[in-house]
Length: 599
Image: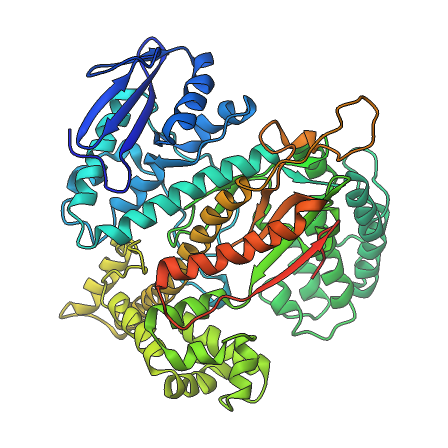
């Protein structure tokens, strides 16, 4: 076997054996070996223990030297450990690492990894024709993530392939950091699901009743929705209009003289008919009912905890997705239902303009960095005289990162090109590579997917001697779409790397905070334990929520300020870890409260 990746002297690979017991493999330096259960000696070979022995085995090894555990994928192994009160410090997630190494252009010898298709993580791809802020915004996955092998032989073979691929990388240091951060993200996701988000069911029900009406019996619609639906039908002069069928609703709209091609919010807003306002209200109510109504409450909240299923690396840029529970789509109006346990607090923080700050850092654009130093970046553009208003600044920056060339973006982006040439050159170059069918990589080495066969077919058709103008137009549009994809890939992917480094560091800092002291005499007043969070997190500050550039920590009240300090320190550390002394800061908006805020 090859030498384990640098950065750790001890690796423990865990996997199942044919008799369904578990094997634990330890690597020291360049030598892979197995630790006997009695711990008296180390020998070459295999070591087996029953599934019920795994928590004690891991607890013992963690106390002795904190190795890096090598898992097929964290969600398969962490629940049993966490329920037994065992938490690990570091891991290497083979499934997540495979997805990075098989595609990274930094890897010179990745053929063996790419050929091991059974380890493909199947991340979400970007849409064929991305649109501005919707690009890569694939936040909920109904299909199950592909299962990877969990047996020890497959895990060892894949670890060997990945070690060889990493050793061949042009810049193994950055790629090693990315794999460590991605794997730490896998641990965070598993731990957040185990701990759950503290959730106030009564407050959620109150919000639903306020917006929709009291909970109806069975599958009936709540009364406020029914009342709004009647307003729509009256305005359309169509008492039988079906508001829940796109086709039938479109027919009713046309019959009322509302000539729209779809029932999308954006198109309906262009009409001034009296039916539009109540129809938009009904659609808003319907989304709330279907996505986060009482059925969602019954399915996803239990014993005061909401436990969604996160999918780290679920989007090709490295952003997270979700395979259940909709954690990345909780509407702001439901935020007050996030309520800390008695004696605890929610410490919430989000980064202001993470993506443009990451762009400034990776491009080394000092002027752009200075525009956002210690302040809101968009307001900084106004102060610098680049644009007139904060809204114009936002439009310009988003247009630059997403490749918008029309409307206000087309008018404002040239101003950024003149003011921030280094940043604009970076995204312009990435777009050019994508338009020509090439791939680009993030700061740490995550590489964009190669355009699919459909894209290549369109380009070939445009290059034929008998190509039509329609063929050429299709090829031009496809090239532009791919260029916008790669333009934003490098920015969003690098921002996702910063967020992973933030999460990984914050997780360890929170683990070092003291646990709360509980009463020793039954009935004596004292700090309340967050028992619903499980044995690992019931007495200690812990992460409960993550959304791209936002985290929420559930902390004992007496440690809330320390948790807030940990969040700030982890953000500063993430910036230094990725970008060294680049003159870019990542300011946080931070609050400590009993409930999460709507805005």
